[in-house]
Image 1 (cartoon, rainbow, N blue to C red):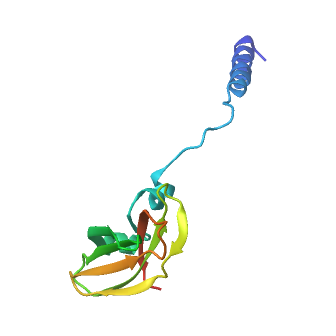
Image 2 (spheres, rainbow, N blue to C red):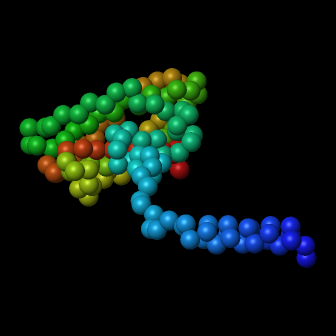
Length: 138
């Protein structure tokens, strides 16, 4: 083995050893919108087909006389064809944690380029926030 090859081998081995010592410690948790969207948004489209076909043109929320939260979502079909989706609401407390009050998914049929108002009412007075979720009909 000649000196040039020996020096190159020694330098490579040294770099490998130094790189091994420079590995970081524990990783800090990373927050991404991909996995927290249902915790931060009021209207969520759960799959690709609904992301293309559906939009929300408005959300109205009010507190009823008995203290329960009522939400009306205006859901619009963006396509020139009739579509069928499923929609539900998850009610949350003022810190964003679920109150256990989640409506069952209901089927919503939207005519071509139409908008439908869908009403949800919380079952208890704990609900202060909510998430309306829409998915392709199954």
